[in-house]
Image (cartoon, rainbow, N blue to C red):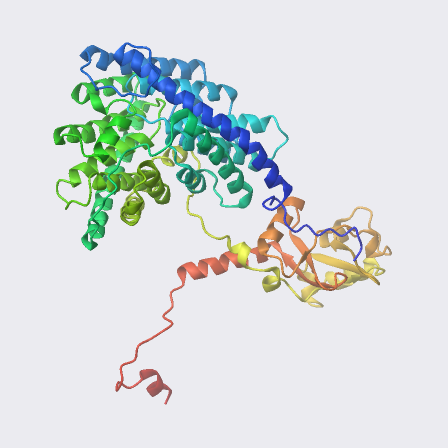
Length: 603
């Protein structure tokens, strides 16, 4: 085969090339930086909380409500925090508004994984202000956006593709999350389920490397071990799993209510006749009123979550936290303030499970709180595997694995049946973008060129004159296969020398009937082989702007064995639709002694 014929086999895939190793090397410092930023954010939240509610200079992570506070402080601190956030968003960057993960998703899908530098600075500060002044939010959303911004900024200084920038953005985001919660595997799962939109070595390996570095750094910065305490002894029986299904259903219903409240609140704020800059302060009023009812519902609330999992909260407090936390989190988040969703879901789910423990049989202290926590995560985030692994890594209660899987998956199923989108993806949809989180194998990956290509190929000899080719192609009645073919291989004594299109023959400006077709042939055509998947051909067509590709014999590359066209790529999709929609009964049960009606009819 001539050397000027190109065979591009794996376009766009650097999964097993030095590019993957390069991005992995770049992800290591991104993971380290995200781990340090996570530590700084936790300390900043602690500092602001201590200053506002305890009037002391300390950076330990505490929550409001441990002592009695002046009611005016509880009421006005969230309002002041909302004012600061509104000003930062108005005059700094509007991108700091929201709970972090939708903004990261939007940056990945619609922004080419590019994040402005000011977001990396303003997002953690605004979140620390929101949480430190009593906001019922978590630190994970802000650290995801901040870590992602670090990865994106680092990538923007380098000569990288959008996919490579995405990988470094997600590496920073998940590394920050792993350092915050000491949950490396859950962070990697979150990347796969929510942020990467793929599960390929080219992205998974760098993300895992960044998460590993951040988790290692967490030890000397924030400590080792489980974030929350949990009893190590569980007495799980068969009925326990049935009750986990019940818990999952209840958790899903709570998740649905919370999601609907968030976006009902957002709709209500949009109808207000005031600039959005003031919305976080109005949301602060809601937080302050809730804090007057139940102060322990304010702040990030890790101490409350720990108390739920150890069974040390009074039932009255649990009920107050469940109702107040759900309301103030949902309503204030719709105001566009800055804060995450995971920690509030931990607290709300833990409170629900603590109440369920009053009815369900005892399995172990904090067991039902842990089960409901995983269920609420599965229902709210629509990431059941992440919810299960998060719950395990937060408590190290690995004996609860199967109950958590049952509850989280049940909640996920119920949530999917009731709501079209999750709290994380509804915001993307409201901005006019479609986001699918249902991943399956691309049907173009499992159908090969040889299954769909046209094997009746009309070829032109290299010395055939253009005028003679007109006679063959102009009359469909003469040679229908030649007439409908749009691209014609031009072959010589040594095999393929090029291709000529119908358009070049009939519409060429300087084509003369006596010229050989080889004079107007494209001498470096894109080709493929029968053993390539259709996805390979789709990538070729997209990259080279062609709709027809010759197929060469792998053993004898001088011989054209077929042609594959753009419409033939639909064959993979058609097969996928048939498998999804066509119902068949392949096996039947025939009772002994009953006559076979089919046989009777045929007889």
